[in-house]
Length: 481
Image 1 (cartoon, rainbow, N blue to C red):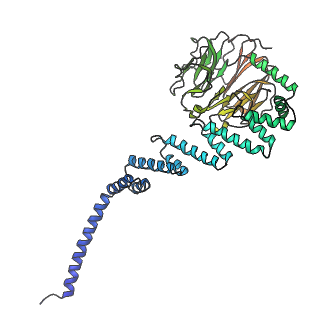
Image 2 (cartoon, one colour):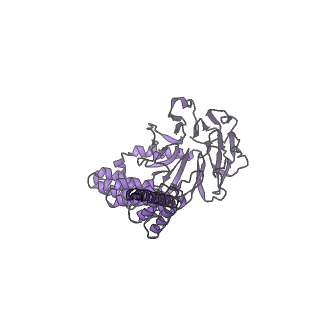
Image 3 (cartoon, rainbow, N blue to C red):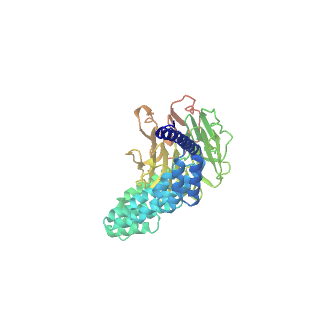
């Protein structure tokens, strides 16, 4: 007797469905095993077509994507965004792999193009800020001045007095000086441009006489004669030799063999000095490259941050060596004075404008500055009238002829040889009010040094490593009235 048809069909159905399931499972397993390779092949095909967005998406969905290939496709996608004007998307993507190829430079290019768009749209203030932040890239600093000029030109239509300040702040850029003088003549009614400008600034003949007197005193002061590091103090004698005291574990005090020096400065654990012939010497910790100065020539001034040495060249540009690249400095031109401390570098242009390596130490109010110094996250500048500007605090000082910035406080030297001080925290204060006859000052983090008229050096503060043992020094008497 034959088996019922229904039961036979059911058995066959179960058999075939089981076989089918096995085949499907095997196919799925094979597909899973080869999924990464398939995705990579598909991504490669998309890349060949120039569709890097698709290529990136395919590789990102793979559990075992080639990391180097993914980065390359992302880089190419970022380039395509940049070329098509999607600068924000491009910068975001480049920022995910900043050390790949030229991504850091490309990020700056993105920001530069974004700043250009702001300028083209008439958003001059935003463009100005963006270009300044790019100082050192391409012609960003020049474009910064273009924006400032556009703002001044725009402002003159509604507020001539404000425009006067803006044009004057531009110094020798384009015809800014002439524009400022024209506004001053128009507002004051004075025919002489120089007199009109002084009238606008509230500078009387008496003030001019005071400024000339301060200039005479400043010119007579010994300059670049004292410096302090973290735990050491260095001094420059009148005959061009150097002395140092304090911690010397890394050779930062090995300066006795130097000669024919005209300036000295200290980093955290190193000391640098400028020779009369425009060359530079350095000693101490050099693991970050801060002592690699042997090839420098035509240097007119030096400054040290904690782990860098910087030189001002005769053409107004800056050279730097050490831990921080300070790429911003490559765009600086026309610098006449240099200052540095902690991680900040500041410079003064020939027009009296202050440039800074860090946004925290920048201010467009820093104008008409003669000398500058910096530390931690601020900058301090000395004006011809003896007042002092600072990005961190208001300093109601007058008749000041020298300044020095430290991480814990700021020192000033007035025309009568008294030492002024401002401490950010009372616990860091060092008593200096009793000193008189001072001719040079150097502020540090935990100690400071003062050169007196008779050539002796008073050093106060922490003395853990003998950094204040300068009582026997005599750097040479100074004839300052």
